[in-house]
Length: 72
Image 1 (cartoon, rainbow, N blue to C red):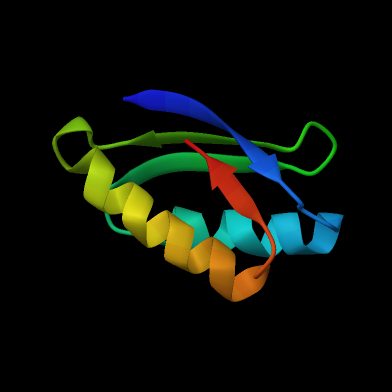
Image 2 (cartoon, rainbow, N blue to C red; image 1 turned 90 degrees about the vertical axis):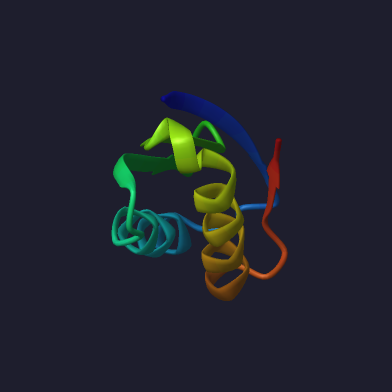
């Protein structure tokens, strides 16, 4: 399943790159990209575990950029 989410308060391109690398390491994620310019997260992951994967993605994003919010 592939979905696109808007990001709120992503402050720098370096943080976006760190988030992207960390999200791609999560088990069940096939691919993920974080765009600083468009403030979007595109993620392709296992459909049967998508909600639990997204919970992990939120934790990773908060660790890298505490003010950033994924608008679901």
